[in-house]
Length: 97
Image 1 (cartoon, rainbow, N blue to C red):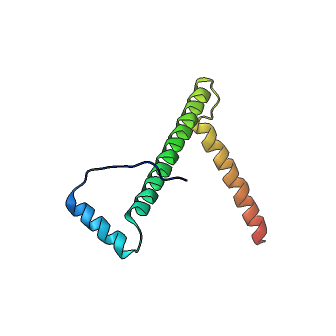
Image 2 (spheres, rainbow, N blue to C red; image 1 turned 90 degrees about the horizontal axis):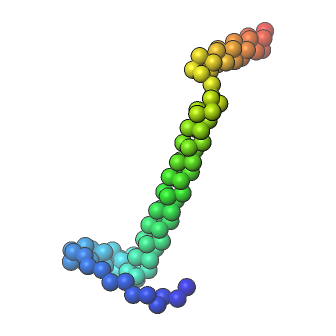
Image 3 (spheres, rainbow, N blue to C red; image 1 turned 60 degrees about the horizontal axis):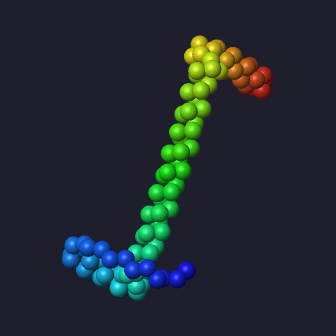
């Protein structure tokens, strides 16, 4: 990847001095560290945006199911859970015998 673009920014002198000292201590050019930080930032932002889109689609899908009446009532869920617990307890009791 060619490095033809120039990026100029303003920052506090203390931050610049601290950053340059840490870059030097790690034996790496400051520009390399900044490129890595920028890549990480871009990746995090993309992942966050993709997750938000995924979440919004799941919410929209769930809302559509509710509007269509395609969902289980709380009582129905409780009844199925109780039936499953009963079956599992029965299996556990027969395994102990």
